[in-house]
Length: 478
Ligand code: BG6
Image (cartoon, rainbow, N blue to C red; front, side, top):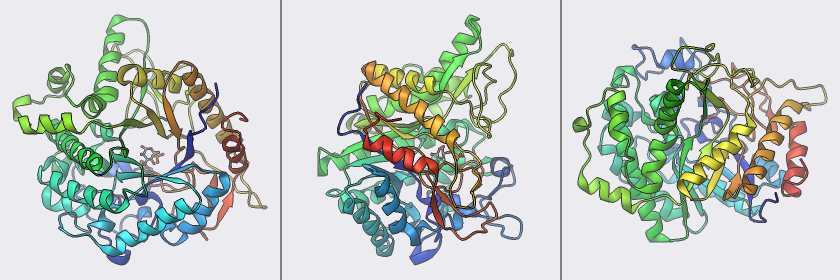
């Protein structure tokens, strides 16, 4: 099925994973700056002793330097333009604008950087798609306020969001309030600033943090619409297509519940403006007493008034559930868990590759919500080998993306309203879950290794030319 002429083909990144310059021009530290690099990243962060201190004698911190996009953004955006990007999704580092997070006025130098990034996109007719908060909240808000479980953060975030919306309302039409807001169910460190030492083991804190984020998001949406009703402000969550291991009703029911909790809960609040019917059951299953949560009737009104305009979501893999204990444990899906799906191959990081699952996701989300959808992350993290002539023959990546685009096309035929597609890490960057450079997603190779050695030189992979053709033919030539 043909993609519409307005379809937003592009790519996606996040400030903390590519900008570097972590303390330049007044930027404060963010949670990502305190995350050690390496395969044990999640283990270290989930350890009871982890308390957000930066221990340079013990660990390396790849997010500090990223791929130095801060000093290369013109070159990088030029390459995106060469591929024909219609949209570029990036995030604004909150701590570049409010170094501690609780200040009342912003850091002008930080804003000046994003003025340039946005103008550079517009120069090439690339629509900027801005994530207001992508796993990079100011570290100070975690250390001093305890992260998102503290209601005080609502006002800090709204103040920050208003600064961005006021400044960029005429230049940026597409926004997202929080990246992968639902990921906190399994890993609240990145999005909510919660680890065991400041309360992540008590799920009450996670639900309170979510509520505070929902209110903050709704206030930002309402404010954005008051400036310009045509601004498109979306939610953003991980979508995990989830299958039952077998037809045993026990497994089917457990799968349905997991879908409600993970895929629907946050979207229900942000899209429909109210908590879903299964909320009480979800609380109970997570050992949360609803009465312990601070949720006022004014808050519930705010949620109704700040419904999002579209759903942005990431899709990388599917998961398979078995409550009965049948099936072998999945190896790489550290965050979502589950068991191995015998019908699917896995990436080098153990993520189950499942393009049909994307068609399923699109139909499921559109069927439930009937708002436009935007796939703002998708892609294959793989080890790339750079050849002597500086090319990378990444046919495996082309194959992955091609099959997912075919699935999108099928979903269009199914009647889904899909706005765009911005594959993840359109230029190689630091991985969020492992802090590795060697887990590469890009169309553009960056000469940098896991220890931070390399020239940072950019070169085009085979997928660069392929994606250029895909965009030029509006998805016809795959
Ligand atoms: C999403 C995040 O979870 O997946 C990105 O929004 C992240 O920040 C991406 O980079 C891929 O995950 P990873 O761990 O391979 O970088």
